[in-house]
Length: 556
Ligand code: GLY
Image 1 (spheres, rainbow, N blue to C red):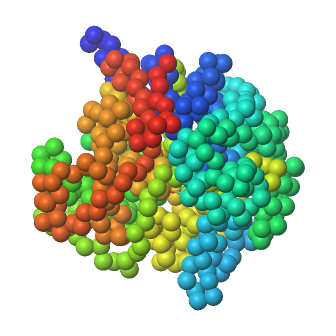
Image 2: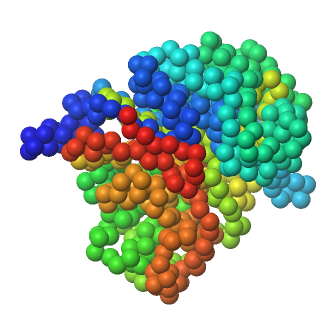
């Protein structure tokens, strides 16, 4: 027993610090927002694929069964861990601004933001990155041909499936925008009405688009028939993408952020995600406190103040690393964290008064996240999105592809909030070919004893969900407990702590209010999908967020 424990510690320490791992789980775990996607991942593992092939299957199947959240018309971040050599990397498949981007087109005549332009139709869409990520994964990390890994998605798109209540509600919420675009209307409201429960959704055009990607790789999407159909529709609806915008799209392999917290190693999304930077800043602040010694209100006070400060920096400094120089060394230094701690009053909330107040917003269920560990210990944490539900609501006829509305994640009008109430600065201003800032935070957590793969959708709340999820994992919670725990969220502005039902009891709420916090009840948010690996027992665990009934976390 002692020997096994020693071997596990050596294996994980080696794995965590990038050397060869000597342990393997021998079985696999997948958690995603849709059972068909989780099953697609296991189907590909059973055919001899690894976690990276399974990620292609899960990602592409989510494009088919959860198009309100993500798809090949969008983008995402794929955090990868290769067991063979301990390599961690982030595949950045974030969308880019087209060459013709013009910030003035997102403003009304009076200079105020034109929300319709940034959220719906061709101006709202960035050049998709998801197809290039799937091709890259197959070419560089998978064991199977792309055509094999895409087969489940192609099959399901052709055969169809019965969408759940969330999908139908998303159609109802966007019926006016869906009705504007013939390709979208035909797919989602074939009789001119919002479909009822029991409806079978088929997307044969998407099956054909995926077939072209399976056969031709990037050229199956970014050139030829698919590109022609997309460009024709974008032009017809008033956009100005060019063939060069599509043909020039490239995924980028980036070094993830990687930091230590009380014996844990956290590997997470680098810019153009703001999530990892915010996460590291928050943990750096916490490292000066012993949370276990604090009572619950004090502990929450400390955590919320860390959130407030990290979100302030998010608003101020972050953008696409290929375009802006960010003061990351400073923001992530121990000295900076010490300064932030010094500004936290022991028994009082700090008012967020640096930036003008902003609108309340609905964090929503947008975006999707899935987590995978395969039998060899390869791991994938992917958060992918078309931004808000059904993205721009524009499906170019003949493609079945929902184009994203990720342009809204740029600071299109400086200091005006986006769909998540987040403000932005010059660092996140749009420019041709630039990636818009994101909150997506796929994350690995390592210790010599346990490994966690974690992430969630939810716009700006992604960052605080992952933060709270990691704290729960460190505390020893199971995957099911981590996903179920009621959440709270503070993002600097608005200066409010949002809480899910049951997150704070009455005594805690009163104590926090006495410190000056404004606590606002809000419904549920997020859709966390977690897998974990206990190295002491070599057991995997998986769970999909109980807030929705479509997800599936499974160990096989
Ligand atoms: N579109 C949401 C995000 O990337 O954070």
